[in-house]
Length: 41
Length: 464
Image (cartoon, rainbow over all chains, first blue to last red; front, side, top):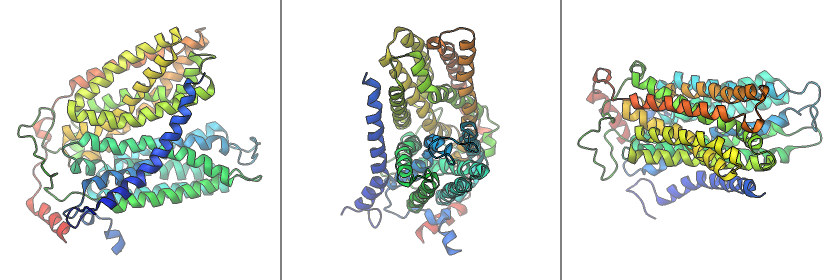
């Protein structure tokens, strides 16, 4: 596991970004699917 | 009381080896939660049927009464950001995030009690006052910390956090609808339980942010980063004390720059659904209009990151010049798009306008840092957010009243918004002039250097 001295590990970075990124991406995809209805006429 | 000392700034100083890339997720933990405010409207209809369940009954709350919840929250957002800005700056990001988390979750729990007892003032107090203060404190809590961690890319760093505020609705909206469907029964609509669950989720999320946030040790710089040898004309290396910033013309010019740009954007954002259907009758259906609003929300979020990141390369003042010049062209194009029935051009104009609306929020902290230095940028940013509150009144009023005036004077609905678009374009010209007048802050407002002893005591705490 890559580490910056005794500081932050790559796993900690992945967990932190996943914690905020996954819900955000799911929400964005859902919104994008709904937005496509604008061009379906 | 030992736990409370964990919240102090001195306990959040990063040890050697801490990655600065842990700080944006910490900021996002807070901003994604408080961004729920943009999705509050999903509760409006269910809260008008708390007694009648399937439809509104006598005694049920009206939409106009519920609309005050958001308005109160916005007022307290501006007030708390202005009043508590200095406390947030001096107390550190962890204490501010913790406080915001408690107020935000507490606001939801109090609102749940308000729904349970059918007492509207409890919701005004819970979501409006407590939630509004959480919005203000939470919004500014990570700003100066991010700027200190990313001196090489301050725009991108604050853009990432403020993007979260725009993106919070994408999570909150489907989550709220899903929770209400789970708790909905024949005897109640499930709003109270949804508030309770959301309060608990948001509290946990925001506490994670408070736990992982760190401030850099005094004198820390990113590896390989060398501050420019020759300082640029509009980027100061000095700090201005929070209340001295208010005495400078630069603060008030930037206040108007933000207010005018946001006024133009917020008026469109709030009325996009009705406006698109009236300008393209029979072409844009209510479902398609909802799709347009969703698309605009994506551009609102993406613009926050993209424009703020771009400002690191082209400068803050030039970024605002882009907002005002491109915005002017797009606003005067909208009536043409409506007249020619060009839906794609109309959607393009609105999406770019909204991206610049978001971009103006995310670029302004770095603009303030360039003008007033890093030391009190969070507090100064807090006071500048009163421009947002003012724009929240001007924008919708301009759009609604001018449309109403036009319709009552015989203008067809499809053309009723044309005058508004030209007025918005005029506002952007005023903003362009204000931005043009922004010059470097006079030296007499600069703070004197902090004592070495004060810096040494913080450094000692970091090593402990």
